[in-house]
Length: 446
Image (cartoon, rainbow, N blue to C red; front, side, top):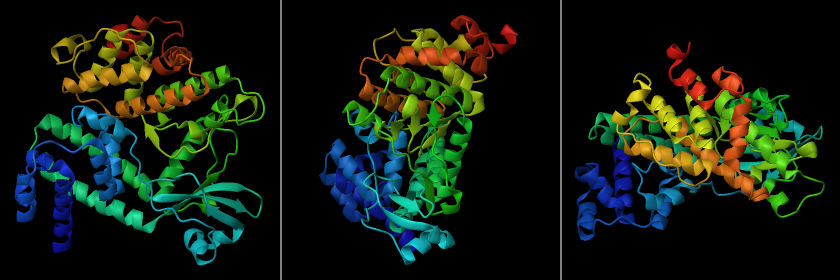
C-alpha cells in the first residue's frame, strides 16, 4: 500500500518538475505533494510548459497517460488549444525488438499453434502502445500480421490505469455534476480502450465484426482474423500486400487506379459505418488503406474501432448530413438532441447553445466547430461524436493524399443520401426538413 502511495506522489512530483504543477494546485492536489515538491512549485511561475514539454511528460508517464491524452485532445473545454494538435498526434510505442522470433519465444506466444508458423520477424510498421507488430509466414503459405504484447509496456499500462483512477477520484470530488458527467464519459472510453489493448481477443473480435458487416458489400475488404493464432497476448490476421494511399500518391504502384472511384467507395464505407453498422475506423491512416484490383479498398490494419450506439446513429448521421448540405441550424438541432434527449429541440436556444453562421471549411472542421459550440455551452456530447470527428479528420487527410481536389463534404452528402431509407426510415429523395422532422420529432411526423 505504501509503495502504491509513493508511486502516486512520484507522478505528482514528475508533473510539477515538468512545469505543470499549477494544474495540480487547481485540482486540489497541493496537500498530497511532498515538502520538496511544494517548495519547487513555489519557485516556479503559474505559466504552463510548452507542448513539447507536455509530450515528453506524457510519454515518460507511460502509455495509459498518452491514450488518455488522445481521448481528451479534442476537448477545448478541458485542454488549452495550444496543446490540442500535439495531443491529437501523440503516439506511444514500446521499445521495438528486431529480428526473428523462434524457439521458446514463439511457443510462449502461440502455444501448440507455434508449430504451424515457419517464420516470424519484426515489422517496420508500428503496432499498438503495448504490442509490437510482426510479419509471419505459415507452413501452408498464409502471410499474417501478428501483434504480440510487450510485457513491460503492458505492466506500465495497468499501473497507469490505477494511477489515473486515483487522480480522477480525487478530481471528481472537487468539480460540479456537469463536469463529473464529462469526466465520467472520458473514463468509460479510456477503460474501453484499455480493455482492448490488454486483451487482444477484444480487438480481434471488433475486427471480425467489421469484416462480417462488410462481407460481400461493395468494394470493401477487411482482413480475416486467424483465431488459431490469437489469444489474450497475441493477435493474428491476414496480411494485405496491395499499394497503400501513400504509394499511390507517390506513384509507387503498378496498374491503373481510379482515384475518383476509390474516393467514392471510401465515402460510401464511412457513411455506412457511421449511420448503419455503427462500427467505424477511428484512425483511417493513408498508410493502412490499400487499393487492389478493380479499385477494391483493403482496410489493412483496422486496429482501433469506435462504436456509435444504435440510439445515437440517426441523429449523428443527420448532423453530418446537414453540415454537408450547408444547413447549420438543422445540424445544431441534431447536436442538441444528442445532448438532451428529453428536451424538446425547439428549446435549444435556451440551453446555452447557439447556431453559428456558416463558414468555409472541410466537413471535419465544420463538425469540430459544432462540437466546440456544444462544449462551450456545457452540453453533454456523447463521446462517439468526438471519435467520429477524429475519424473524419483522418479520412480527409487520407483522401487528400490521392486527390487534393476531392470535395469530402459533397462526397459524404451523396454517400449518406444513398443510405437515407436505411438510416432514417424515409424515402431516398426526402428533403432534409422531412428527415429532420422524422428524427427529431418522431411522434409529430408519425
